[in-house]
Length: 198
Image 1 (tube, one colour):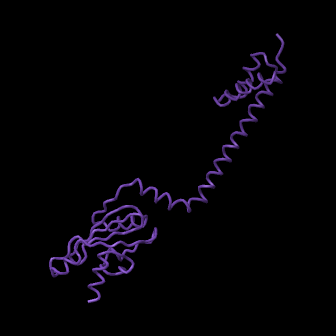
Image 2: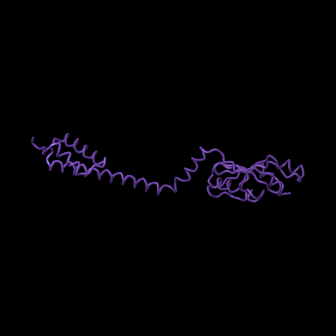
């Protein structure tokens, strides 16, 4: 039987695809060449099919590496721009974090503009803090029992909201009643202004 020395394009393509598949399976070029020779291909044709199969394979790898490098560069350069957006999107899907009385937990969440709540005691009075989307809501839940009833009536149940920028939460709002309250608005702020002006 005569050796196969030339192939029509459609058969050559199928033969090259066959060789590519064998290369991907981990077969050596020697064993693939042996198979082709056993199928009555000439040594020149077998070598040509192997060479063409190998030639196209590195181009594919090069394209994959090029695309991966492009995506990595895009992520690297756009990360500072999209990180705050991703943080904001994350707050949509995450429920409010209950920090209890852990101020560090609350401050961390607040600096990320995440939804969280926290309670603390300032001079015997209990305050609740909630943050969401870089807005703090501070509410006077219970005023110290030693305060006059008039003061309790003015403060208890009152809230104020304070806006801040991502990463710049004002910790003074947690530690004192009136420090930096001028940056806020609401009934609690009005009550503070009324008492301070007396």
